[in-house]
Image 1 (cartoon, helix red, strand yellow):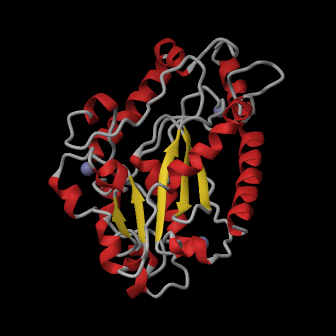
Image 2: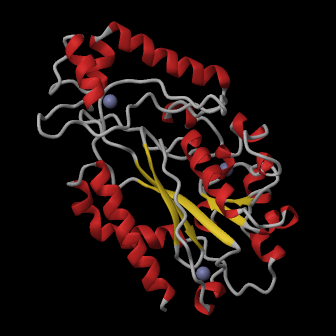
Length: 308
Ligand SMILES: [Zn+2]
Ligand SMILES: [Zn+2]
Ligand SMILES: [Zn+2]
C-alpha cells in the first residue's frame, strides 16, 4: 500500500535556520493521482491488526485492452462475467453480490474497531473536522500522495494514498518513515524532534497509536514515546478542541528549541505549490511512471535546495 523512502540530505546554514532536523511536516496532496484497478479487495497487515485500509486493489489496470482491472483481477472478473471495460468500484458494489458483502465486511470491521474516521459525514460531527477527500468518481483513481518534508524544504519521503487521506494510511506511512529517521537517535532525544500534521489530533486518537508496534525495542514505542506531535500553525485556528491548542500547539517547538530563528510549518504547502506546475503532466501518467517521475523531480528539487 505504501513504499517508504527516505531521501538523503546534506544540510546548509539557510536550511538549518528554518528548523531542518528539528521539525518535519507532513500533508496530503490530492492533485497528483493515478488510475488503479477497480476490483474490491480486503487489505490488512497481520502484525498491525488495529488499522484498517481501504478495500482497494492498488495495482495499475491493464493499459492495452482498456480494462479497469489489473492482470490478476481481469482473469477473476472474466470468470465472474464482469465487463472489464465498463465496471467502476461503485458498479461492482451494486452489481456483484459477493463484492457487496466484501465491501460491507471491510467497513464493519473498521467501525467495530473504532480506529478509523469511516466517512466524511461521520467525521463532520467531530470537534476537529478535516476533509479527507473520499473519492466517488466513476474512474478509480488514487487519492494522492502523503508527503513528509523537512522544515527547510527538503522532501524526506512520499507515498501514495488511496480512497481518502485516512488516518490508517497516514499512520502506517509515518511509522515506516519514523523507524528510519530515529535509527541512531538516542531515545531520550526523540521528543526534541517535531512532526507537524494538520489532522494530528484525529490521527493521534486511533487505537493503533495507543499500543506497542511490532518493531524491536525501543522502536516498538516510537509513536507513543517518539517525535513530539503538533498541528501546523496555519491550520491550528480551524481546530475547535481545546486540547489541540495545548497538546498539539506548534509553540512547543520554540519552548524546546529557544535558539531556533523560525520553524517553517508551511514546508508542505511550499512543496505543493512547486509541484502544481507538474499537475497536468502527472495526471496523464500511469502509476509506476508517475511515481518514478515524482521520484526524479523530488531528487532534483532536493539538490536545488541544498545548493541555496
Ligand atoms: Zn537541512
Ligand atoms: Zn487488481
Ligand atoms: Zn483538532
